[in-house]
Length: 466
Image (cartoon, rainbow, N blue to C red):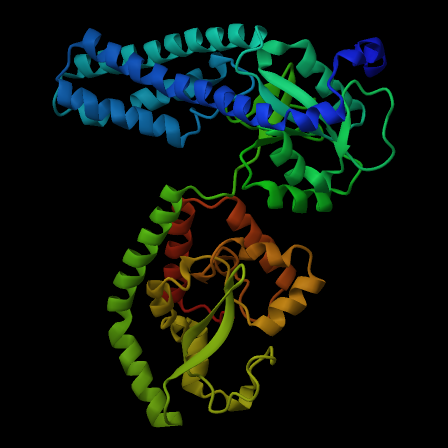
């Protein structure tokens, strides 16, 4: 059914004024519609694991540790994410894996057969309980309960069709309120156009939107990326329809979502949870403390050589951008006899650099004093490298989305650096890798970057960081 066939039903839709007046109701309804499903799936998993423990008959303390491990794996794997398509079959394989991986907890305390029975009961009951919960949620959605306000970005043929599908299938739990798009506004749309993509944050906040479906909009993709990044701290889940959505992608179905046969790719939220920020800070403090103690003899020896060759001071301080609106005086070992104008000179004069200074730069030992900046909380152990204000402003004007990299605190090392983008290398490529790091940050990625940095330092590859 196409958009034109809905014209006679458009009187049943709320007007724009009605939408604006219903903002308070939408926000309160949105909270209820989000809390119930958010609690339902984890609660179903807890009940399933408790029932499995009773049926398997294993030791209660060991079973409790096993259940906690299974729940943690499911949570980290994103299996508690609120999906639009409530199809448990897509998640069954990962549920079985989550139940099987923690078997090592059971084996020292239970016979192999009993441990296998516990895992089998756990996987089977989690699937069964989830099937029951999802069936209940679909039934509630059909009755208009727990429906989430939704917004479609892009009012072309596909966008209009997505809005129609949400209305035709209430079991999806979506209540579409309108479209965002640039260009001429279509008169055959069943839902109103609430603004342009640039208005996303305002519209989401005004109407209590909880789901944003991004289709092909009239604006440029690079403009849409900027809008989506700026809107991610909002309390709305954003999904993107792939350009070639009719072609199968090598992505596990459990990582996708779906609206009536049209796949969706969920975007990660960039508003970092408090637990993630605390974990990153703890990693910074422990890692920087250990590395500083290990490197202290090297730093003292290097400082002594610098003072003998070039005189005091051994340390060099320089103001750099270390985050969005943040500046700090970072520390380095001095490698030049004369610095000239270090705040506006991109390449250090070769004649002013000592042979020992060139070695310090090649091995990155001159950067090690920044571990003190990490301990102070002015930097992170891993993140985009800090830049001087003069060049940060210049690159922000000349290079697309260079400023987006400051969404994450600056780091002693980063994703761009472990790919060889040090010194006088492409700034646009650095920005690309830095933004990729921000988009896909995880504790594991930080560990990988630190390991690769240490390996490169041992191999003493040339090319000083900047």
